[in-house]
Length: 294
Image (cartoon, rainbow, N blue to C red; front, side):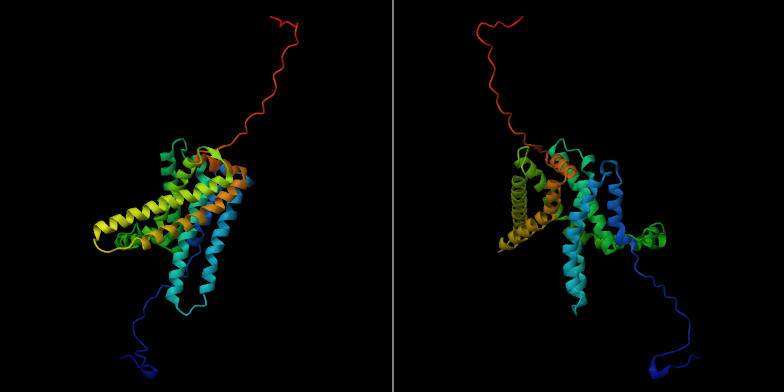
């Protein structure tokens, strides 16, 4: 018979229970940055000028990391954890934009629709990958190996399906961001002017998200008839404009200062540097009485 422990804590003797405890690995957290190093090893990025991509990426990651540090002293761990997950969204989008600038030479930028599809594909792939790695959606070796085990494959698939709703707010800004870049290049009419490009980029993002918020509002009214105000939809659209422009601006400013990324920005937006018109020179007329030799 098992003996009783002190204070009525239950049996002190009995069958042992196996408990597996492992520390959180750093490899999933480092996967986005290792991916950036792999992209920098590509042939078009072999040069010190390509490494300047770390500057806007570090600025955005640092700006998102400051609220995390401020919330660490909070007594509500649920709010702190939710804030940490929410702030991973702009970090993942920043990684996607860095990958877009590094992979720009491989995109087909001869047609605007193909450019839109290429931007959309790169941003979705690297943004979702970065978010999944940093949040921990089963990108460790143990989770990947469990896909090959029939005993755990169903549980892993169920966990992936359960996580799908979290992909929606992550991927939602990407089509508007890609459409805003393409419309900005169309509005610039092929001319490269830094100040005008920034203004047109903000105007393009504003137009795209106001239109999308109006479309969502109309669909909401059709699905759920009743008194629904447009103000919350418009506020959400304006928030997405501010988020997209704040994420794009550091990379655009880097393109203004770096010739390598300037050429890639002009390729993505189908822009050309504006060439000043040639200075007219007076034509020299032959002196009277002098005949041109045949």
